[in-house]
Image 1 (cartoon, helix red, strand yellow):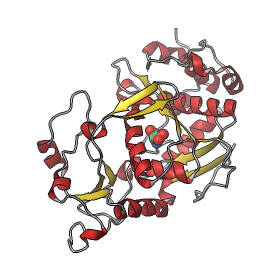
Image 2 (cartoon, rainbow, N blue to C red; image 1 turned 180 degrees about the horizontal axis):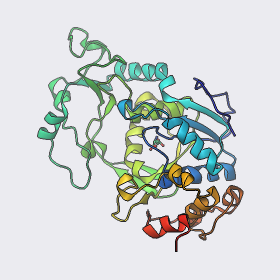
Image 3 (tube, rainbow, N blue to C red; image 1 turned 90 degrees about the vertical axis):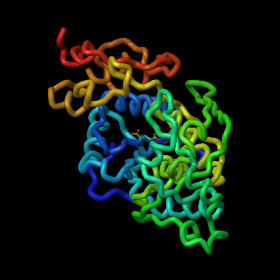
Image 4 (cartoon, rainbow, N blue to C red; image 1 turned 135 degrees about the vertical axis):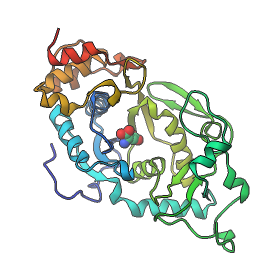
Length: 340
Ligand code: GLU
């Protein structure tokens, strides 16, 4: 187990490229709750069963949403459950030169363009999209100036290269039309038309920060990640990340394992509105980690009874994992507290 740290290291220790490698990537925008704890636990158990290395990466680029101390809290919560890692923590905020290089490469290759549209303008211009809350960008700025890049150097607006600094413009990736596919290790073949779903999406925000989509692609490559295990709410993001990988000339060899996530009784992703399901909340109430692990195990197709982390690792079977989303109920909460 890693010791407490003061300053985050900027680069992970070197690793053998022949050993598969995964990452645990908490976002310090909120606390670890039972849902993301289950995702990390499954990621960890798979890694330990298959002898993958584990990197702990803190996804701390989400500007104002990052909460002071939430990184420390996530690390403590993981350790309390018995989850360990081989390398890190690495902080995305320490990897800015790598993002800078990727943005430059996309710009030089005419893969991105500047966009000054406001959210209100995009809302006005785009038809509402059934079933999801993401706005589709209708391509207004792309149409206004077909490409940007060094050849447009005479144009003061799109000729200047993107900076990792606040500006009135963001930068979007040109997305093709048509269905893309990938083969998920758990869910099988997935397909999506990114242009139809979200349109040209942001890779560099107006705040001058790489978007999650870009940062995660660059980090996964930088850190030699081979296996990505995460919630199925990120399947749509995978298509965007595959596009960025292609445009950056990265290979296509990553394996994706998208896990059906935990939802509340209303079918929505576990969140505050469903009550306090933070790991730290149960810790404070004196619930032992074995009991939390017991609940998480029952959400992985196993029997519901308190268990040790070693037992979880040995008995976990990816084949028994439910293929549909798990619903957290009040009864689950009561079981944790020992209330009948
Ligand atoms: N930090 C992201 C999250 O907590 C995970 C990103 C990823 O796995 O790519 O949802």
